[in-house]
Length: 340
Image (cartoon, rainbow, N blue to C red; front, side, top):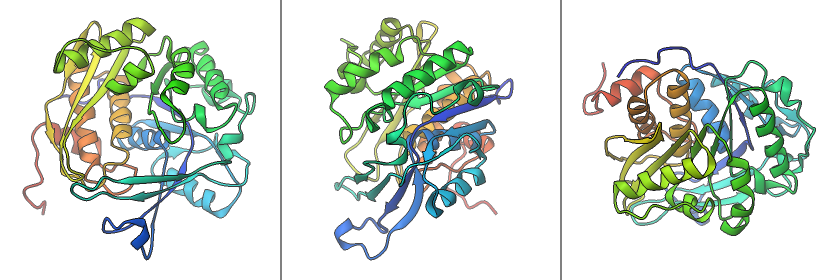
């Protein structure tokens, strides 16, 4: 695999930035004596991954004027993400509690994000023409529309501005049952994803929210589903992660990219899971970085799936690992020997 033919340019991400409080040693929340602090949020995770791989990333969100938000912004800037477009307002950050799974016991996430700063946003609050100036792409996700009564309208406003300015527009469906039902998502998301450049989704999301499903079995089913999404909504590139496994600490991962009328699959990765939260966002951030940097479809899906696999070994929502490290992993480097 070769490095991108050109600099990937600038990616602007829009969505909620959350405080994450997680138990240690895979303890249930009821048995926790302390909680580890991280910052999170799907779009922020994508921005961090994009910047980690050498791109320029900017985060657009709304945060309160308090010390916790200040620390969050410090952490984002420390990971190379521009925060100059973040709005100040509202009274609180959203947060979530994570109880990491172990073996047959699945991880559990509990949200506490009602009335967060971003949930009160309305159209017109953000000068999108200014925020998106000089960017190459805009990324958002299906987590944002259900956060507040007008958040879907804000997303529509942002997408329209990005398209008007000629940016490549990317969305991860990122369905969250704690935020809305499949039926509610299906009433909102199809209109917002029409004509995208990139769409990230799972097979269930494609079927239940976008009304697209493959009829075949195995790889052909996923390829058919991705093709159906691309054709029905006029989307240039559709990407999916295919997961298997029954354990919180294992399983397999494979990536699919549909573009130019054909499907490219990554190789199958065996997972060793330290922390699986944020792996799909690492996949999205890495794929956007690779494709915007001129990497071909086959190489890009290998690279993005490798980044997602790598993320499973990193604690917290934000991935660590340079372009060179991920590229070396794609080419067969392993963790069997200590680097000295």
